[in-house]
Length: 208
Image 1: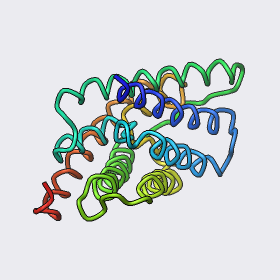
Image 2: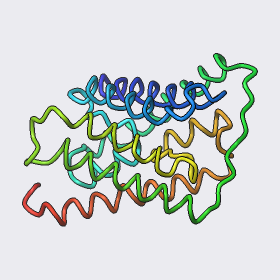
Image 3: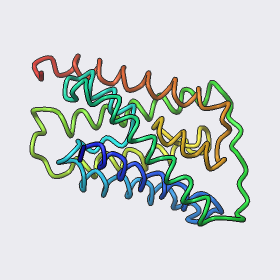
């Protein structure tokens, strides 16, 4: 049960940071730095308990890689989405009155942007937090957080820079994205998580 609670808490603070830095232009151009930093510290805080996924696409990738028990997959994803919704509701309360304009996505560019950086994120997670060659390292949280920061700076203006199905739910609740567009995020992100796991196995054939 503690694992699921940690996943909820970590996802909450990730999405809460997204909302507070983006709604009302709270952090302006520095929002990606704050978001990546929030993920980094939450990964360091909860990685030893739950693995610090905070992302259903990461959970899928880690499961396909063989480092997440099947019985934990659905509870992890549910915990992550609950954390995201709670965070979105907290942001809506704190930012009452702020003008929010949902992002209008161009489908194919958004699909590609979300796929590429979700792939990068899951691939980094697998290689820094689950691989034998990097076991016991102290940099995995920094690597993971900086991947999200880099992606948000690079393609945030194209797709919103979610790279996370739970974040996609959160930004939809906050009206930063339109609900009919959520399939774009989920398709790209879950596909990227699966491809990252397959490529991890291909480049690490002896890491079981």
